[in-house]
Amino acid sequence: MKKRFLTMLALLSVPSVAQADVRATYSDGSVIEINDEGAMRGNLVSEGKWLLHVEGADYLLVNDGGAIRVLDPVIVEQVANTYTPELFTMILGEVPPLAAHPVGDVMIDGRPATGYRIDDERNVSFAISNDPSLSGIGEAITHQFRIWTFMQGPLGSLAAPLADMLASGTAVRVGNVDLVSVEEVEIDETNFAVPGEPLDWFATEEVMLRLGLIKVG
Image 1 (cartoon, helix red, strand yellow):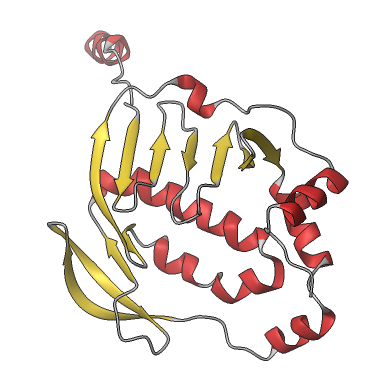
Image 2 (cartoon, one colour):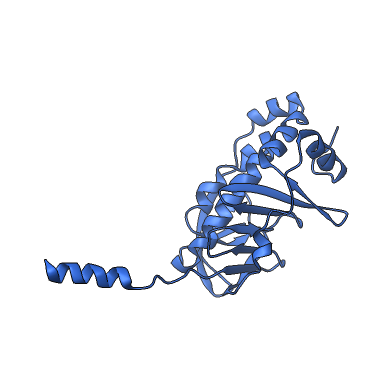
């Protein structure tokens, strides 16, 4: 009993290894960043817009003439639905969702992965790596993809099934964008700070219309 107690005490006294901040950079310059507390931010294939996940909440950050506006994804989705014509929604209901088809092993910047084509495309649009050292990046990408498709309302529902493919590993290729580097680096904590309160419904609508995030007609 005494020996078992001393062993438990020794295990408890071993300091835990701190999880390092990680930055993944893709070939278009976009990044996924994760800090040691599990917060994450990314602008992967999103035309300069950032998704921020911190303390269990998600935010969309958009540059509005130099000012950063904070949008609530739930409100963004509501606005998107408001501006989706009913006829368009009905047509989408008849369109099958996108499907990913594995095409075998590929090599992306020296990383082995499984290639996928979407529907009848000829090119490999996605490549998923099973490297466990990249799992945190993969989880961040999958989460952000789910948020993006959710915010797009009915149109996003067509792409939503691709989340299962992304969740199977880490995307080292997304469209024409490839993962080029992964580094453990101290990331400025201000990168994960929410720069203000989320806009209300009407202010969100005004920003989305003005920046072309939704179109009328």
